[in-house]
Length: 220
Image (cartoon, rainbow, N blue to C red; front, top):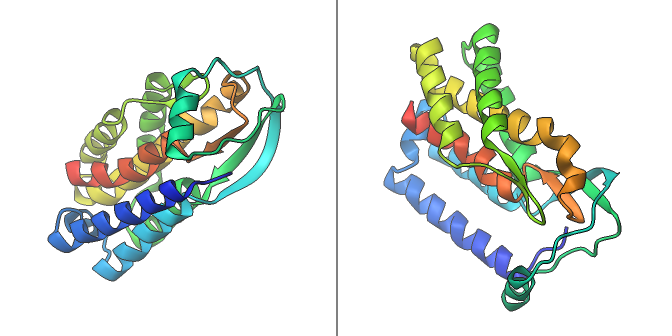
């Protein structure tokens, strides 16, 4: 996927802000609850932010023609953003920072905490259903969803199912739930978006997957 120097600069600034936030203790509470030291937290955040620049193509599907872009095209040109030409097919890829990294961390939490499989599956299922019902395809853009719904749901479910291990359960349930409900269950609608490429865990759902887990931990 093409990326612009402006986006790279914004990611660098975002990473610097997040590192500062961890140092100040804003996110340090969340990572402490997840059993991470600041150095490990920096590594996870850096991998998520800079990994968001990397998309690994999986397959392509037949797609409808893109809608009239209007001001969106002018805005992208002003910001220096590039876009792949539409060829009648949509490339489906997986985003490293928005999918691979958080899923890998979920596997780490499942291996190093005392989370019960049944409770994890229940939490993921509830968040997935809520994410699916509240997400919607937006032509020319991708899959969109309200930001606070998933983390609030993950936190509430974690507190109900396992209050002792609410933090890791909220992260795993929120992360995997959004991935399943807002991405995987909506793969059949990718061809209707009218976009040349769609990334699992990228663009619109990056916030939903990466930040939902952290916010769910804070809420829990």
